[in-house]
Length: 310
Length: 287
Image 1 (cartoon, each protein chain N blue to C red):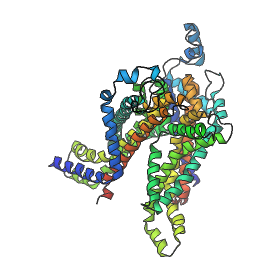
Image 2 (tube, helix red, strand yellow):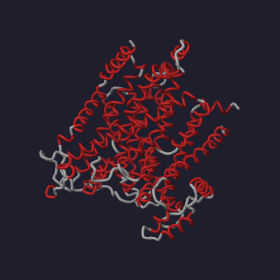
Image 3 (cartoon, helix red, strand yellow):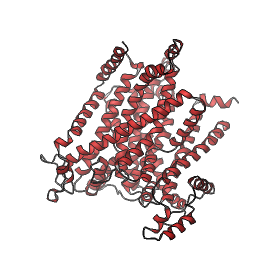
């Protein structure tokens, strides 16, 4: 098992390097140069040339990339054009908000989606199944930021129950977490229903029933355990979608996490901050995929068996 | 004879697609949307209704004259939404089409040549897959700057890796089937095998994926425009209209309700069609 984990961690290195290269290249396509955006359009050409030289911007792209990688290895993600502070400092100070939002949303999406999915599958074609499926389909098609705006409209503007700008109390987190979680919960519901419907018809479930095992145990222990595999895989994929959606939702609710930091940095053309924020979110995503793979290996006896023997 | 058989396949798919009520509902909704979008110019003149401002008529709630009400400049929201649909749906269709064509080229080559080339392509895809789709689109949009063409490019680039992966696996799957082996044994050339066996059989899953993708693109386009990275006002794109209207949400909630519903309903309809097509094309469910 340790061998599998080690191999999976080693595989992560080229992916992280590649992600860094991609993000670095994409952001480098931004027209203009750093000195002009720091000093403003009124600066003299000499001053701009001088500062670009100091920043190392007059060197070719591959050299700058290698330099950047070198910095990353030393924990240096670059210096913000605006605040002249290390960009990582700003990211770290805002990360707790993003982390709380995403973890709470993922947990909530499983708590809502999986039991409802099981119920839909067990009572296939009932009214409950039908309404569940329609709601889930609608939720998966609704733009998240619009869902957020509608929540604000109903619960803050009309009813005055919840605050909606900032992240000072736990009540500020309720609407953003629900907004992030509902579309993912809808996906979980549909997936759980499909996989449950497949496993319920498997021979071993029939055997368990024939043995006289109680229905609750058949569903909970025999069927659900096997149906959970694709759901675990999907939690990782959903996390990716969630991190993308996070950027939008944080702006809607003015949450001040890494997402809003990214958007502000884009608006201010603060290239190092943009690169670092996007990279940071992508790194978190890759790490999460790694954890999902390892968890998957633990619950799937087939993967486990392959490594335990040697 | 070949042609007749293919018609038979399409007719068979349509027959089974028709049986799903939800899929038909999606199709009807999409046809209604298509009608309004195609005839948007005839229903509401672009210069008169979408662009010209009439401050005396601002913030009118929905009425018989203005179905969806008017915005802060007195522009008719219904007219802006049907004209906006042109932008949202064409960004969705164009970016999905271009990314599929590029992905089909890369995916087919990777599947066909295999070996080192395939490994290199797959490793490059792994890098792209390390960045969530919307985040990748945000990065590309941020570096290119706002605008319709840049937005379409950003979304196209972000979609290529996912499509390439799917198309490659679909083609590999078909390539291992017995009838390809039989066709090879029969002496068919590579081009015959690719054009008359692999491509027609790969079309089904690709069309399903494409339908669902247009829905995702409509959502992502709106999100990017909402963030100010996509289409800029005064162009009537759905996300841009929403972003505009949110300032006045407290007193004129219809300014955010209607464009949001347009996005949600069109994307729901596409998802329903995609679901129906997948079931209709799935040989396992064939009766």
